[in-house]
Each structure stands twice: as structure tokens, then as C-alpha cells.
Picture 1 (cartoon, rainbow, N blue to C red):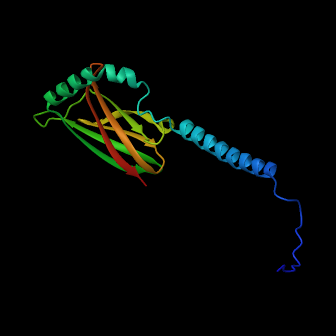
Picture 2: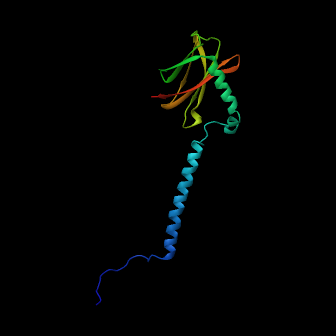
Length: 167
């Protein structure tokens, strides 16, 4: 039994050539977008925490020795943070093992934005009182690390890294 239908196909039929072009177009767009996204991800943050990881690995034993020497000093270092207009001010208080303030140190604050090193800033902290050093930088909102570096007679005596949030 044959049924009569009023269906009339319109347009051109779907051929193997059309299916091939559709597949090539689909996967071409997919690969293009993936390539673009991978390139942008690598360009915005290369995934390196430090500039020269090999050199840092080679110097690792020196870092351990410096940490032991730092611990032997018995210094206590306090950190406070406040907002001054658009800037974030970090104040460092340094005392020796007897609780006496330490003067005559060279203090530097290195602000590290974990997502990209392009926003990192280094600020010299100036002495504002006995054993108190302060420095300020304009930081965008988000999670930051501040590395405190104290030098005595040009040699690093103390270093620590602390995390904080900027609103």
C-alpha cells in the first residue's frame, strides 16, 4: 500500500561534501578557540613563581642556612597594615631577643600579587621610630603577599613572607 504525501523537499540535498565541510568547520573553530585560550593563559601568567627557578633550586642550601642564621638571631618582627587613602601602608616593628628595638637596618617591602608578576612592587621602608619601619604602595583589591627583607651592613639578616587581603 502506497501512501500519498504532500511533502516536497526544498533546497539542495545533504551530500557527503556538505557534511565534510561542516565537520572541518566545527573542528576548525574548536581548535582555533582552544589555541587562543591556551595562548592567552600562558601569556597572562606563565606559571612560574620566581623568575629563575633553576638558580633558586641550586641556591636552596644557602636558603636553608640563611633561615637557620635568621632563627639564631632571635629577632621578633611584627607586621601591621593600614589603608592611607588609595595606598596600603605596612609597618614593621623589629626587636632583638632582649625586646630592644633594632635601629640602623635597611628595610624593603616586596608586594607580590600571586596571579601575575606584572603588579609586583618593591618599596623601601623608612625608619619612623626606634625599631619601626614603614612603607606604602598603591595596591589593587585582592589577595597579596608581602615579603619583608631586613639588611644589616648590606647583608640580608631577616626575610619573611606574609599574606593579606586588600579591599
